[in-house]
Amino acid sequence: MHDDLSFDPRDPYFPIDGGGGIRWAVQVFTTRNGYGLDGVDRGTEPGVWTFRYAQLGQQRRFDAGQTTVRIERDDNGWVFHIEVAHSEPVKSVKLILRGLPADDLAQGWWSPTTPRGTTQQPPLQWSYPGPSWATRWAAAGAVSLSIRSRVVSGAVLHVASPPYGEGTEVEVVHAVPASEWSSRVSVPPIRLAIGTDAAAAERDLDAHVRATRECFGIPSWPDRPDVPDWARDLDLVVTLHGQHWTGHVFHTFADMTRLLTELADDVDPSRVLVYVPGWEGRYYFEYPNYAPGEDLGGEVGFAALVESAHALGYRVMPMFGANGASVLRYPDWQDAAIRNPSNRYPVLLNAPDWDGDRHPEGDQVFLNPGEPRFRAHLVEAVSRTVERYGVDAAFFDTASFWFDDPRNPLYDGYRALTAELRTRHPELLLVSEGWWDAMTALFPMSQQWLGIERDIRAPGLVTEVARTTAHLADGTPGSGSTGVHEQGFRTYAPSARISGHLPVIAYAGGDGSAQREAARRLQQSDTP
Image 1 (cartoon, helix red, strand yellow):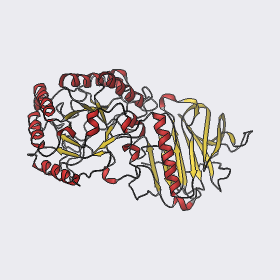
Image 2 (tube, rainbow, N blue to C red):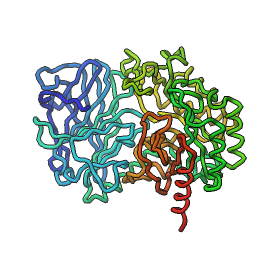
Image 3 (spheres, rainbow, N blue to C red):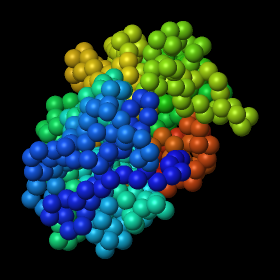
Image 4 (cartoon, rainbow, N blue to C red):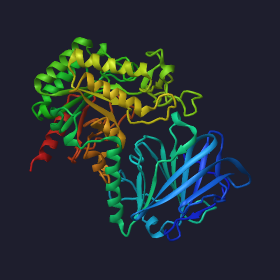
């Protein structure tokens, strides 16, 4: 939902030197209110503006501090440096642009994850970090906007034509991390570039990606030290669904062993990663207590599955929840529950209707791995599974969801989690659900939220540094069941071979014949 003001904020706008009619305004948002600039420039040097504050709508003015905007020329662009001082804690700052070239804006907006050959027309709103805006860069025609920062923080691109405006307005909003709210804020540099053609935007994207990789220390795929040698040869993921939240068993561990044995006639097991969601028993109901489910065969059955899979040449990856937990299984949940940015209440998230009564379940919460005890719980759960059963990889459900928890920054928690696991288990492959730019520094493989069939505009943003797979929610060959996932049934769409992406063949009941046929067709598609 996009909420808007119901009145004209009457912001004063100022020209960009050499911008050909482009003008800018700034709004500042504290924990108590939103403010515009009073329009009286108190700057004393060229290219620097300093203002005090006015109420949005300009009905009142306040001597509550000041905002300073410094604009630097940068080749074919301008870089905005915004410094804010206010008597109230600042939570976000917005740069608004008017007068951008209309012919460029008419071509529509795109980001690296926009489907190839398409653009999006306003009104639009993209939020970083997440699937709608995987890196803080966007373009329309030869116009591009970017934020380059070493800090993971919320950002929004909003494009619309408000009735009180003068055509299209483009907003770039920087959200101050909730753990850093203060009366003084330095906004990461915001860069506006205007090239002579669309190729200029592509070049600007390349420069942004290089800078972002440097900011977060993201190595290229061949140079990653966190990828086991065996993982570089993977070309297929086989998903074996275990037990649904309701207790329905799709496959026991013995069933899984049989299916893998049969599939070995149609694939090269040494190039297959076996992904096992719902191995812990009732999916999500048992989160975050991870041990082989008794209804599936318990510890003995799981040990036999891993041993048999290894004997055939497969690698095995059980599923863990990076955030999800049942309050029935984790009594200390309130200490780790994700809090709202003002730290006034826990944010209760992601409550699917698991049992089909058309109402969400009430015992599921999202916890923050940034909280030390919950992170230690996850580390011990994964380590115990690696040490007891010799699994090769660990999948972290929901890891790329992002929340601005003021007590424990989420990204810092993921960084600590992955660092500790790699110290304990250097050969363990860590895989996440979803990705955005900084997450690829921590997880060399992820499930693709966006749907790989969309053939995104700049797949190299992820595939040059990591690998993706199809999502758990994709339907299985034959029935189309999504297994333990809450999507129910989705038509199976055979995966195409796309560089950097591993296709998935999933089992959720049945005799496996449809999966073997899908595997044979996939193998045939690989034949020159």
